[in-house]
Length: 170
Image (cartoon, rainbow, N blue to C red):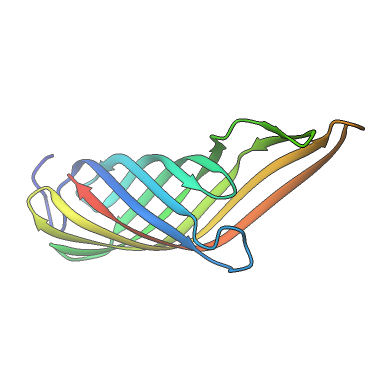
């Protein structure tokens, strides 16, 4: 990474890895789906970050999120709050399955998130990263009954609060 040209973190390549939970309605089968994500991207000297993210998330089944991650540092040097947004698509990792003569086929869905974060530098090229976001995720599947080939489509919509803790390496 290059030397910083102003307040905040260095410009250059960045890796952000985090674990999180998507807290939401207790009426859903998954009250707080678990999430493990990694983003790789570039931070400019003006505090703008753009990266690509992926990982694994557990909703009704396992999903591989693929998304664009954008962040903007607000102020600070070693403790830096930032705004963030992400958008992309969740791809199902579970194979289609058959159960009691019913066929289940999984499809992905769009994802979107906006929120705030805080980077806390504890040593050179390393910081803790805390995030709080609103998160939208769609997942879908079809269920087909073999005896009459009747098919039903289902879409689950998750509107959640996403809480993440991770590390930032530049």
